[in-house]
Length: 137
Image (cartoon, rainbow, N blue to C red; front, top):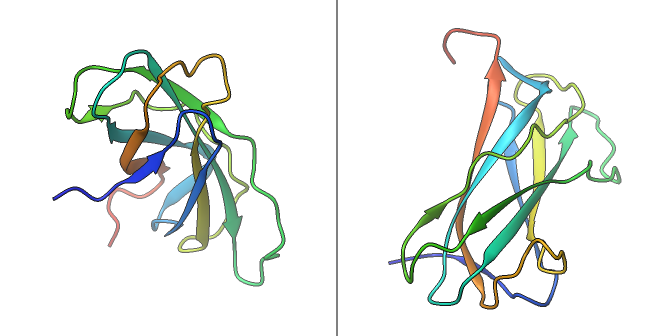
């Protein structure tokens, strides 16, 4: 069974998800993302993008997302899971541990760097934080 968010090659579509800042995470040194996806056919590369926003206690709910970071991956094979390289570090304003983060992901199909002619099916996003604690106890 596979649950996906399917991103069209010609329409810019967005998906959002929330995460809490892990205890000891240092978001000011950047958050890295890796996209897990697959497709049923085609050739070329998919350009994935992600941007983040922090909501600390009493945070402004009308704040805007930060600058997006992107990664491109070439298509490997039909119905095979693809794991991108990590994105460059995404800068998110300093927030307290366990503050809420909102991320927005999208396929940058309108970019010339995305030349994949089929839908790209997003399976998930892995986030990596720098930590200042040896454990998350």
